[in-house]
Length: 209
Image 1: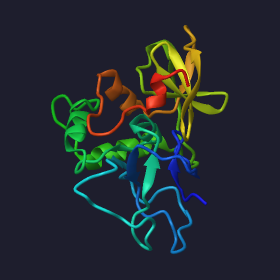
Image 2: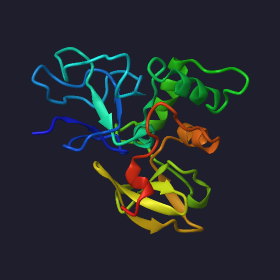
Image 3: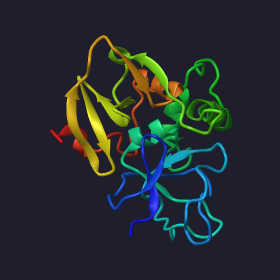
Image 4: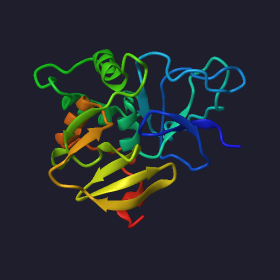
């Protein structure tokens, strides 16, 4: 049985056998039996490389942070995670440099985490969404379509699944979209940020599904 450690663009933690291309964490979420008991522990939600300095971890050790996996970096960003400042140092530095309001002085990791924490969750504890014109959204942003997450990819929208992208449809013109990706992250993507140390998009995004 697969562990409950895969993260969707909606921020949910699910069990699925498909492998993710990006690793990360948001604190210790599991109990001593490896069962998920909370959605997060702290404000630092990070996205990491799968391999770094030959480090190895036994999954879901008692009292240690919960190892999470994402289909790709666009999925991690939509869920409210940011690049790790250690294993993805260059990705992190360029991400911070393009952070909104960071042109004159680069914000600290704590300041970015605090802003993301405000943008990704509502007072009721659900994922926060916002509206934007669909025509204006950059590639890599996720929107809601039929209660499911879809990726903005060129002139198309691609339906997200744990194993990859499917069901491409034309991006509707002249309409509003319910956006999943946090506003500050959308701004960074609008400024052409792309990772170099992890996969921004799963290979299925470049196929016909």
